[in-house]
Image (cartoon, rainbow, N blue to C red; front, top):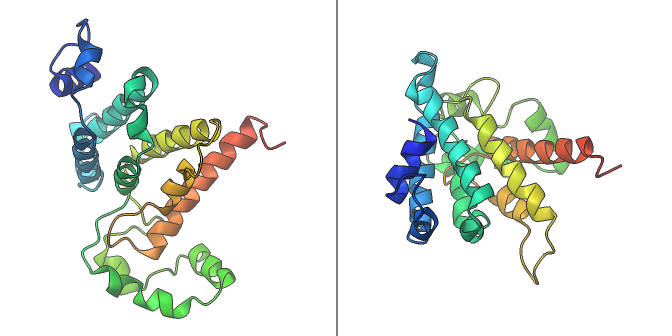
Length: 216
């Protein structure tokens, strides 16, 4: 797969065609939702057993590069990037699939956590879930999210969306994009997954702002 072939498949015209941008108007949000659903499936597939350069390793990265290209070059899609539907689907792509009902996976944690300090303590010590829950959720010992190499590209894209949104003059009563992202999580995601996801987002944004001396 490459960016040109993905473009041609989605829009029905080659990249070099003069009618590229006029055809984009026919693309609906559902197409992006489908691509993000495919992305999440690939990030949760057994990619570790694949050889370097295999499609299961490379295609998710190419797909994120494609989204970045559209974001920077197609202003007609501006409203899609800040929609709650797109942000929720993008966020869900880095969450691992859980096979137990959500209520079963968080009951113990909800009973134990009684204060913000205790929540931080539980998260820092990786005790957000008991052993049985961790085994059923297919989670690694160091992360509750996917560990596919494309995860970095997903969070990088989220950071770009957040930073550029912060630079805009907010519309009246419009929820900031960073708030939408921090609250986005798929069904049956665990508290531990949500905390790790939110930490990734905040760390990425803060690191970028500090590197740019925005907060100094």
